[in-house]
Image (cartoon, rainbow over all chains, first blue to last red; front, side, top):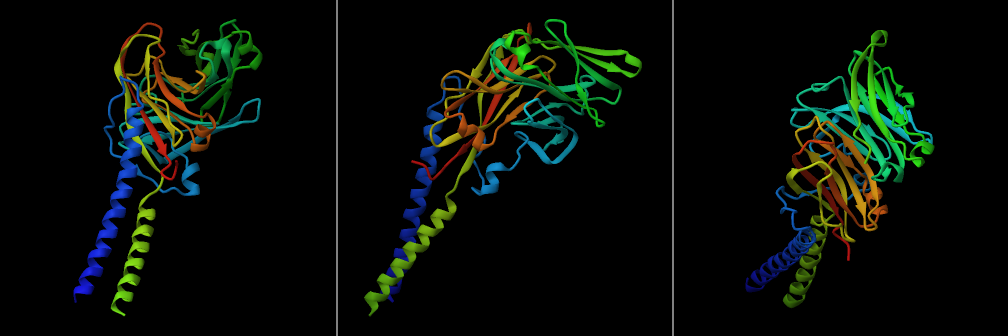
Amino acid sequence: MPIRRLVITSLLGAAVITAAGVWWRTAEDSTRHAGASVARRVSLRDPISRVAATADGWSTPVLGLHMDARSFSSRGRFHDASGSAYTIGEARRTDRAAECVVVIGPATSSACDEPRLFSRGPVMFIEGFEGGPAPQQRTGETVSGIAAPAVSAIIVVESNGARHEADFSSGNAFFFAMPRTDLEHGIYLDHMDAIGASGRLLQTIPMDDAS
Amino acid sequence: MELRRLWVALGVGCILAFLGAQAAEGDYTQVGQYFRAYVAPSQGGASGYSGGCDAYIVNEADWPGANYARVTYIDTSGNWHYTVKSTSSPLDDVLTVGQSNALGRTKEYCQNASNATAYLLSCSFKDYIFSNCV
């Protein structure tokens, strides 16, 4: 009987010591990371969520924090000059308080309107660039989005006055990639025009992109 | 004989505890806020740099919308990567772990990208942490 008690005690002790070791390693990771932050960074406010470290976990598409990936629906698919694919669609936030345009390209981005798509205007878009931030330092730049049903075309106007009609899908998604030569010459996006039926100008959207 | 049983039980117990601990351990993610302030045009805030055992995978900016904001990943040489900008809030910029790793150590940065309007900007990160990393 004493031996059985000793065995049970030893097993419990081993389990407690090992669990404490695991907890210490996890806590050490969190503390080290928070400690490396800049002064204005605040402490972590949300609980740590564990995720499976599977091969799939590395490539599982995530649309953003608090995005409902299952609600994603595609509006159109495009390619840039280098052949990179861009799938543009919409999805909801998990709290259903907002609807978002989603661009799945080399990276994934999303931008939302509350409470519904186009609550602030007939065009929802995301501008993306690599390099920079000054326009002449950028090596690639795109504008992608979705337009309300009233919009039939998106015209992108560059700082040199050149006008380009963005590629437009049957699902009212649009995509435009800046020509590399324009970027090299410091040309930037000046504004976009949303064009309605019979060519009527619905909205001019300044891009505020000079710097 | 009893002593031998004791040692066998102890060995099995230690193995089971070790296996259980390994199963409980694994890569995980942290979500948190790295910046929150009223900012003038072209002003913003950054996170700390990632270390060798973690990788930033989501950069989110939250502001009143209508005006521009942008988010990006900045490497240790100061180069900007995967920058996105919009007038719609919140704005999320998501990388795979592989993409983030390929950039080396990075920090997240968010910025008021409007021409003339100051606003309250809140920025959050999601960090992928490799637990079996030295």
